[in-house]
Length: 532
Image 1 (tube, helix red, strand yellow):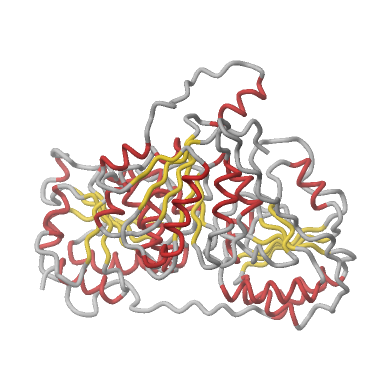
Image 2: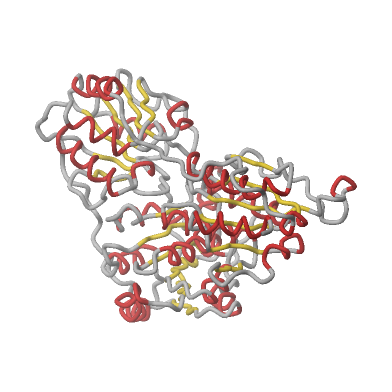
């Protein structure tokens, strides 16, 4: 038995048998002659590697395993690791290092790795002995699961073939149980605040994106007679968005946020901070006298919220505990959230707009579709037209950095092979990790990528217009994303006609859940003149 053999046993024990990687020489000793029960998934760039693994972890609801090359590999992956951290995706990340026996002399490919990822890894360890490696990887599973982010283990290349550790010497628990119990005092404090309210409102976020949390939150909203809003820029939906109590997404600026929440004297944020913003504006987040409570299992989220009361615990369990403690209230939900009607098809010679594409999708998406978003200029329109009907009905990069959706869509499809998966991606965003389409084709990730091709960074253009000063960046209308995708061996089509769009969607959408071949549709659209 070697350290390598012992590590494979750890991976099998924790169902980490899919290895996402773009390896180098420091990883050859681990990978050469890989056992047949371990699956290797190659990405052509480390951002694609980590992006696929992040989607895989989100889809499974369990950690994914990533193997990176030394400095260049980890350095290329940092932005994707940051996204995984903010999306709270558990990743076990092993990073190769030069041979332990001469690393002190900094030979070629030596990495100064411990701090390279900054504060985005939830845990970083370089074992002192080769025999500590399997235990460190097992501990990384627990760290990634508990703290919901990437846990990094740095392994010198000669460690893999060293003798395995003695039995029962690994400094890691075999199993870690995390009971989600809610103490009575916490539930009583929240219930007292809600019972004092005249018009409570609920804000739901990514931390409530589970079947259990949805059931408990729907029951609590019914008991309180309260409307429910989705946090702005949420990575996952915190509430069924086709439910009569759903009132849409919160604005990302203070003035509109205050106006939206003004009818409520108590706001309960569940699985969300209070409150996510984008563009800075002066002024308070809520009207004077509005009381705010937060329920989250993320301590950092609780600590930074402008809340009178924050409870750290399972959103599902806390909401379930409140059901027996709060009084039944009459319904205070006003007019239901109105989704726009489909636009008229463009007249001959008129261009497609995002609304045409999204309306066509809205009429054809199956209820269990996993929808991945990375089209910033189209996101407000998408939120109005495409409700999330399952806890994975909407997935996005919570941090906002581009390059997530293309690889994450492949990873989600690998994790959920029985569900249709659709990505809506801007053409600018797609180019950050377009090489992931090779991996999608190679590993039969049969999802559908919709690229909204307006030939520019439209959000940046709209933001520059607010300054009343010219922007120095050009458009890139000559870039053909479909042609680039075909160059990676993946099927792709370019569409500029409404009738062709409808025909292709009618052909592809009915069998999307069974599809094994990926498809990218690059759709030429006119940029929307506003972004709000």
